Length: 169
Ligand code: FEO
Image (tube, rainbow, N blue to C red; front, side, top):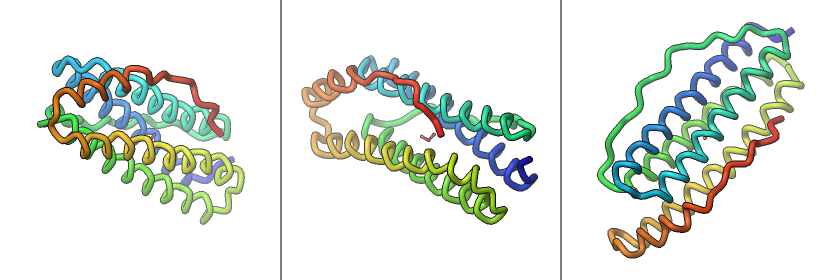
């Protein structure tokens, strides 16, 4: 049986992952309005990943005999001034998620739940990859500044990103 403290912390993280899905869905809509189909595709892959992250925690909590409690999902921002501003927000967001996963791991360690620590380690590794992916796009956006031709080239590149359901845990 899982401790109540860890159960609450996992429920908070489920909420944070569903918020992430919402956050990327809002960016997906923004890129549709901008008619940047590659960026839109990148967001579509990302929001599916976030859904998988939320459901991974959801299933894990149930498997451990815990109670899933779904809380209200915060409203995400809807407007940005440029793709670069979007990715600056994405990087800040993913850094925040990394700090939340670290805090969640702290709880699992404090209640001496080694099975949960081992399970949550996957999320920490995933965050390293996410921050790196986002950082790469942001570096390119910083390099090309507001060059429209380069932006369209990057848009074409981002169109090739595909979703592969992650093997969580
Ligand atoms: Fe599920 Fe992007 O963290």
